[in-house]
Length: 234
Ligand SMILES: [Zn+2]
Image (cartoon, rainbow, N blue to C red; front, side):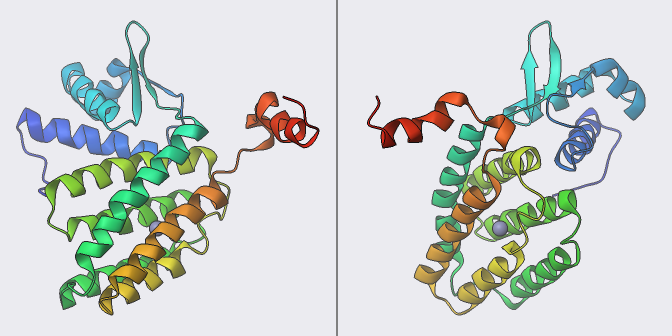
């Protein structure tokens, strides 16, 4: 993918998209934050039209909410959406590792190993570690050369990063780095079934480890349902 910003509107629009996306995923812009076209355009030195294009694309990726007459805001997905998203990712990413098991080239192995090392080094920086962890998954998807798989995994990973930024607990991705290494080892060894199980477990544990509702996010009905059942109430 070309990263150069040309004079063309398209190149500039992509650069605006990348800048905003990075700011959202790094949590520099928090969920619910307003995204006024005029201030963004002024700051980035581009027209409102280009900002608008970038915002539409971000809304298609689920990172931005666009409401008529209300303007754009950084998306605020629910916990339920978060859980569903990780379930969907697990299904798609099982296909990724099944495709790659035993087929990684030495170059690809080197790229993935270097990435895992970078993740390890960034462990203590919450936002950066979320981004790097996501990139490990998109890197794997890219290596399948399956265009639709790459596209969907990219979109879901970007949205997961936002959800983790919103609901993730500090250090909730602490053991993810060792899990990434285990995944890579199983791919190198050509153990498709092991890799598939590891991926399921990995995404499942992110869901249970990181996506627990915080006290103040809990709905009174959810809290009471377990107690109601235990007491034989409806
Ligand atoms: Zn991971």
